[in-house]
Image (cartoon, rainbow, N blue to C red; front, side, top):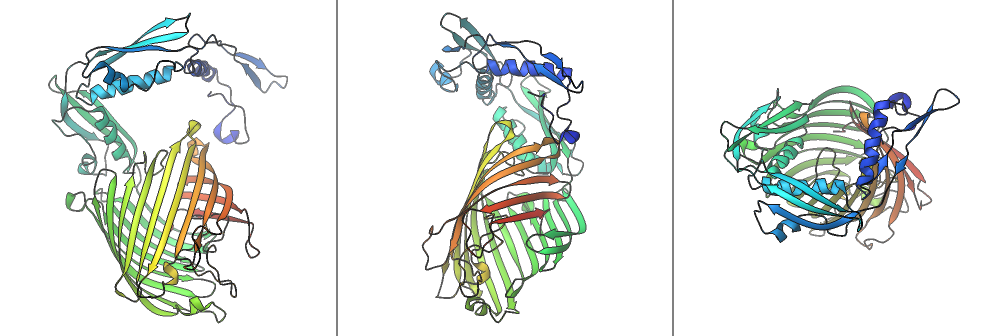
Length: 550
């Protein structure tokens, strides 16, 4: 129902206000709800409005006559059949004996319609003929099909792109001029253009072309800001006071180039970075880019300074599967090591270099990549360090995220990661290449980088050579207009040293938080509760991030 009770944020959302036209819509929504549960004779009367004694509020009473519940009887098809009757009925996602649902009927009409439209029959007409048997409480359904004429794509026009070049949009259109019309191709084209993240709105409409057998396609987009410039101060729970300035552009020069110019100065860290990525180098489905950076981070027992860069090359395998290759060269220096630091840290002191290459495969089937609600993202990467430099190791990481939509815009998601580092030539794996858990991006309820192997004498965490963790989340809307969401979560995992068994001493945490896609960037405020804290650990940890940290 659209009509809701008043709540504590009504002064922002206007929820709880009585509107007669909204109550009328609720009558239709309730009726439709009953029709979708098989109560095809249900009647919902106009609501009675009762003014309460305080003269400031009202009660609404909806009287409902349910009637008997009906089920699906016989199913049949008739008319222009492209394939056999049984093959067509196999595409229908309802069966005799199922509870009758008007929503399911509409969905199956679209399935039948799309099957014909994918063969070029853009003007197909599928009509459901129903016959009600009140004695048996059954509804017989016959799909009557008029396929119409076969059409091809005529002109493809693009409008509304004031900044993004036409070719950036056209290369994501799955149909070409002269191709047979395809409803799936139209839907997939819209999904791919929307996933660029450059537009607030993407609309694909069709109309008859210059000839009867042609169908024109018009793509109308509404540009959104894709760049940002900021100079300001903030506070991070991990880094303390932070001063930063940055320029980022996801659609540089309207060519879909991704540009990053960033600098941040904090009480414990500083970062400078320049990066550029062309996802379609030389107008081919080939990504090429680079990053150059300089970072300095002060930890409790040492300070780490690193200067380096990388070159990235991305190659597509299928529409959703992409490979990436990254060459990285980094020179680092670990200094200001405390006298009471652990031996693992003291052995790392001094300058060293890393020269490595990483190969990865990423499969992304999500519906909307900036904020997914269904689908999954799987990534497998292997990094080999040993092309010169001081470090020699192989790092394997498998990462998987799964999203499943629930009613009322709730989204259930699971994220899991497994990692393993193999040392080569009996060389020690650098501390900063090992696995550390804890913090808002891995195990909430634990401080950043304070979960995993720990020196019992000094209390220093020196990272593991293997790790596994999972995050189970349920996100839900709090204020839809503001894109404010709530989240509850359960985290499980740990990191282990070479001598420790994987999956031994698993740690657990639960918690909740708020996420907001604000004008200044994404904000996350999350509180995690450690379900079994060690004597040196806190029972709960509050983490937050504000905007994108470079």
